[in-house]
Image (cartoon, rainbow, N blue to C red; front, side, top):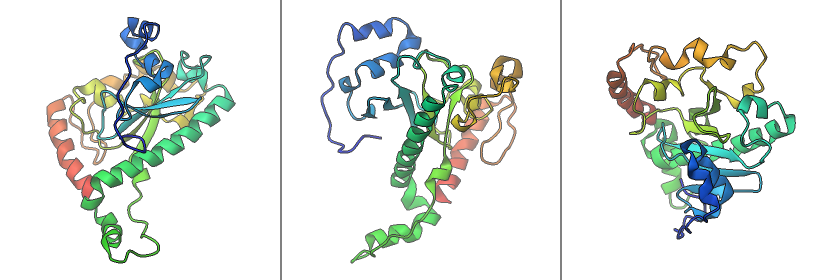
Amino acid sequence: MSRSPAEPTKAKAPSTGALRWLSDRRDGLGLYIAEPDSYSPSTVIYHTPKFVVINDRYPKSSVHILILPRDPTKSLLHPYDAFEDPVFRADVLSEVTKVKTLVAKELRRLYGRESALDETREEAMEADPPPDELPRGRDWEKDVMSGVHASPSMNHLHIHVLSVDRVSPYLKDRKHYNSFSTPFLVPVEDLPLEKGDPRRHPGGEGYLGRNLKCWRCGRDFGNRFQKLKEHLDEEFKEWKSE
């Protein structure tokens, strides 16, 4: 996705000071927070004083966006701690709602012509003259999920907003898949978690090592990741055509 207007801009070289964020791979998101204008619209979709919204560099679905909070008192906290602040939680939930709408619009742009539920809408858009009001068509927001990982792989707090399809060349193993297909991905609406919530102990629960189950039909592939990937491609075709 690119922000609007989608005209290409030349990325500026990051400053020497900003490069300090790259001393640790886990600090990589800090550079986007520090200098979002150093990136083209194909990377940084938009930024505000509170958030930077970017395309995930290694997406795990066909559309995958990250929301990066810029508050320095929160950005290096574990999400379980950061979301204890009700004001921060409300701000994030509001931003997630906006980004879900962006992802839904992108899904419609990418796949609307293939969707049976969007057929009447597509026909109306091509009519001459077009109707005063377009049919609503498919509710693509139902195909968007969001959350934080129970054990984040990056130091800077980030919220995932992505399509449900899990189709991407960067989805390479069981850990990648299960991190978005088990309770390891905690919906932002569930935060803050109760003290006894098992998601506070993801290692003990073994989420990442669970059997691979299709997100759409529930078929259990055990540990056969390549078989799951082949199946996901088939499910992707059917999902788009709904």
